[in-house]
Length: 197
Image 1 (tube, rainbow, N blue to C red):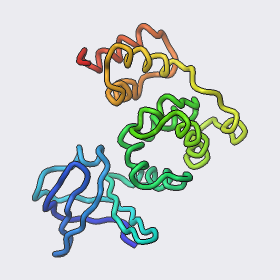
Image 2: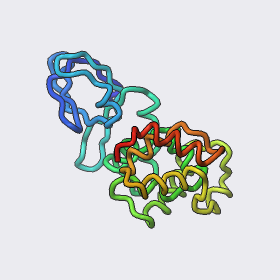
Image 3: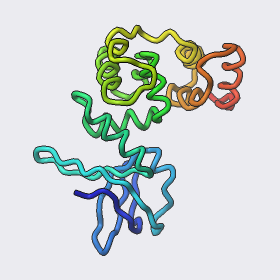
Image 4: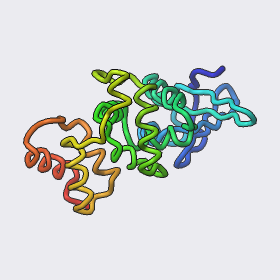
């Protein structure tokens, strides 16, 4: 099984790189986050790889860090989460953001992932809470967690209502405290967004 690849980038697209390793070209699907950190054609690249092999499908998924690969593998443990959905979740939420939304049972944040509606988000919330390490969330709390009504959910709703794209809002809210003065946090989020809807 392939665990990592280091080689020269022959080609790159919006979803994958063609990586030459020892004269062999490997097509590796990469996360948007990894792709943003990747240099252009001809550059050397190290990817931590998940070798996906199920039924008649065999694919390589590459990540810039071991932690990112572990997150991808944890997402795959959830029922009906395949590689495409796992990548979409990772492109929308980083690990810290996922932990926060799972701890707060924030269904709305999961619906920011393209292709996930409310019912799917509710199911995924419970399954991902079981698959991922969420500090301070017991198994009993996972099953009984209510829909999020926290500060981040309120801020997200306000910013989306102002016309900002959900993915930009999520990025702007990442790293902001979960508690504090709502007006001040809204001001900080708007600064991060740069005023462009």
